[in-house]
Length: 105
Image (cartoon, rainbow, N blue to C red; front, side, top):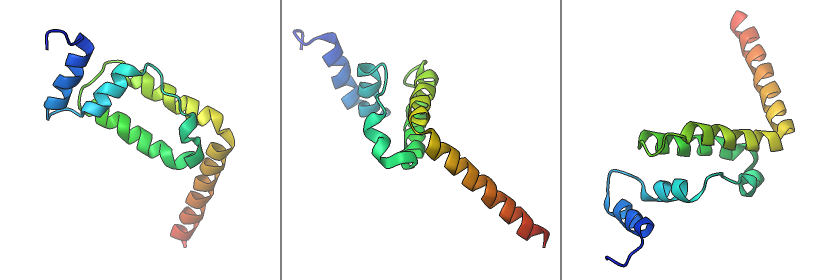
């Protein structure tokens, strides 16, 4: 193992450690910025999954700059689909008004 590069040794150590998710560690170490374009085909359905993934990484205590990466990814996602985000917000607002009106009856 002495000829193994340090980054590969770190990856192997993560594989052995049962307390952390090795895949998340490797992804965060390898990618500084996440390209959200491949996920656009799922529209807003992927947004809660993405948030849950970042939460899981944060709970594992993997990285300090995780919050800024999470916000950056969410911004990129929402910026590319402003119409979908606005429609969803409007739909929720009208549903809430309708439910509030039924509660008063």
